[in-house]
Length: 262
Ligand code: F6R
Image (cartoon, rainbow, N blue to C red; front, top):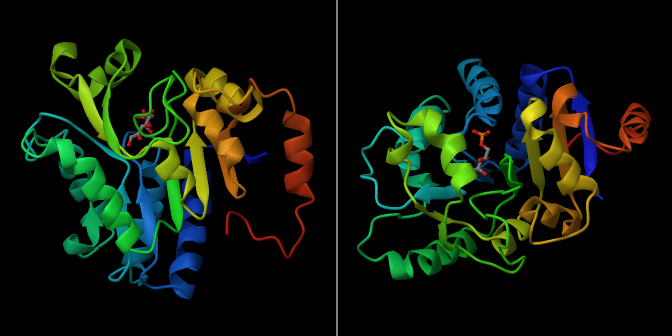
């Protein structure tokens, strides 16, 4: 079962994950961070950027984004290439050549998944994978029904996901229909998973992912298969969890030899 940590809010979550990332990089300067996009990981990136301004050097850290839209130009402000550049590469002062995003351009899309898998393997795998969760239970863009063994490939976005992401675009019709996403099998290969979720809108998906049955209908339930998965949630996102008191008790009594996240 995933370890569940309830935090007072987004900033506390960001600080906690940034601290773990700094520890990771101190031990392994060229560590590989798995990068999520969307609103959820922003507090982590903000907290890391602050540490970088205070002297933390992430110049050798490597990154692999979870996903990308298919069929929007790389330069579009909402392409995940642009988002990762704006929210991660520049503020964290990463070397652009160290950061990878799946290639969602139509030409070569048939082989883009395989190429991305090869690049992750060549980098030695992901050390710490950041994850958000969709209201329909997706992680990456692995929509309900995705195989637990899936690797990076093209997925059709659900109506729900397109509606959820319409806020990033001028019109709901502008949200791409397809994405290229790391598979659940790809995500499960990462050495450490941290799933973050904030707000009441995520409560049902979090409860289903953490405590529901393992099912492709809730792709995030795949994290139950991972031996080192941590779920960091605020009170609202935690509100659907049946075993909340146990998670609080376990965290309050966390052994000193067992560091937070890693
Ligand atoms: C984005 C991603 C998605 C988001 C999810 C939640 O790279 O992988 O799974 O994490 O759609 O999005 P937000 O964080 O915007 O609520």
